[in-house]
Image (cartoon, rainbow, N blue to C red; front, top):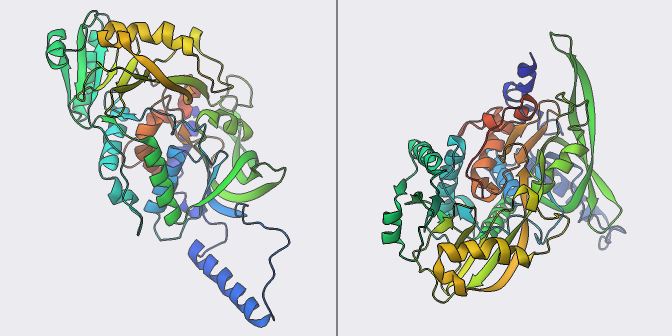
Length: 486
C-alpha cells in the first residue's frame, strides 16, 4: 500500500483541470477584459489619468496557474515547455520567480557548458540525446520574431573519458549502455590514444571512451538568455524576489494497513520583493521547485521532511549546495583545436576555451575536501596541489601553463545518489521537482523541462520515462546511481 501512495503522482491523471483559478477563460481573455475596462474608465474621466500613488508594476500577479521557483536554465526550460505544450494559447499563466536577476551566482552562467552521452544510466543517455537535438536545432525552438538568431557557439569536439586498469571494465559496460541507446561512442586502447592525440601521456590508462558525434560544449549564457527571451514572448511572467512561505491546505488519509498520512496542497506562494520587507501572496495550482542548489530549503518551506524520521513525511529532499572551482589557464604549447573535453582517471578535467591556447578545467573535491559553500571564493591552492600536478602528468605541455582567472559555482548536489529529482512529491501533491542533477543539469535542461511539463499537463511522462528519478526513491532507499559524475 505504501508503494501505491508513493506513486500517487503517476496515477493522478492530467492536472490541467486543476489549472486556472478563475473558473474558466484563458489568460488572454482575462487580460483583454481588463484592458477594455481601463479604456472605458479613461474615456469617461476628464483630463489625464494620474499615476497611482503606489507603483505595483514590480509585484508578481495575485494569481498564477503555475509558479516556478528558480529562473535558471532548468526553470526556464519548464516554463518554455509548459507554454509550448499547452492545449490552447494563453490557457496557462506561468510565473517564474528568480531572486538573482543578474544570475551572478546562478549555476547556469558559471558552468563549463559541456554536453555528453557518456553516462552509465540509460535515462541520462536519453536525456542527453534529446537535449543535443534541441541545441542543434535551437532556432527552430527558440526563435523570436524580429530578434537575431541564437548562436550557442557549440563546439562538437567530443568527450574523452580515461580509465585505469581498475575501472576499465566499468567503462566498457557503460559504453555498451550508451550504444544501446543510440550514442556514437568508441573505445580506444592506449596505443590508439597516442596515435590520435600525440600530446597525451597514456601512463596509467588502460582504456578510453571517445564521443564521435553530438558531444562537446556550448555557451550556457546564450542558452539561458534564449530560453528567457522565448518564454517572455510566449507570455511567461517574471518576478525578481524570494519565495519565503507556502500556504497549504491538508487532508488526512488512512492506508489499508491503518497508517495515517497527511496530504498537502499548496494554495499560495509568498514572494518577498528584492531589497524590501514587503511580500506578495500568489494564488496558484502548481509549484515547480527548480531552485537548484537551494531547492532543499524550498522543499522545507513546504513542510517536506518535517515528519517523524523514517517515515515518508520525514523524508527530506537531499539536495544541497556544493561549491566547485573552475580555472582558466593559458599554455602556448598546449593541445590543438581537435582537443576534446578530457576527463582523467582521477576526476581532473579540461577543455579548450576559444582559439588562443586557453583552457578551462578543474576537479571535484573528495568528501573530505568539500569547501565551505557559504561563499564563492576560490581556493587557488586547490589548483596548485590537486589539479595542476595531474594535468602536467597527463599533458606534459601543461607543465608550463599560467592560470589567468578562476571562479566558483554551485552544484545542486543530490547527496543520496547524485542524480536528478523529477516529478511530483507524493504528499505535497502539487509541488513538482526539477533539481538535484549534481553537475549535469545544464546539459539535460531541455529534456527535463519537457518531462516536467508532460507530468503537469498529462499526468505522466511521455517522451522519456523519468520514473526512476521520482522523489519516492529516497524513502524506499532505492538509489539510482550515476557513475559518470565529475
